[in-house]
Length: 205
Image (cartoon, rainbow, N blue to C red):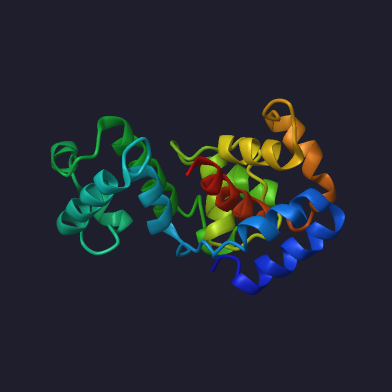
């Protein structure tokens, strides 16, 4: 689902009226494009598969898994597949543990991705039950798959660097400093995060 282009633009305009430095940055870099992932189990499994590897490597492993398990790598098929077969697809022992943790929670009903709490912190708590899904991954899922408008991944180094650049900070803000800085920008912080990634990419090009 994600946040629409119109929502992102409207939200950034609203925050820009509060924070002139952000308004100037948007004028300079332009509005970002939406970043949208499908809702559900498959997106979280792909997050696990993609951890600490290149996009190309993650795609290759995913294609092998789908060939072995079927389209979308159903939880039932993943649980029923043994270690050696999953390893042959490129899934390490650690990632197999993470993937099985996700599949087991989905099959047991311990994690109902279609009915997550509306409270973002409660939803993050449920998502991080999955081994291998930390706070950042949970926040990214809520922002890009569910379009939660006020998600603020303050632990993200690119967000910290981008905000530091825009606000002219002497050093990169810490996670807690970033949370404090962004309090006035609620409930639009998700759109700000999407813009900051866009801005950061222009910084490092």
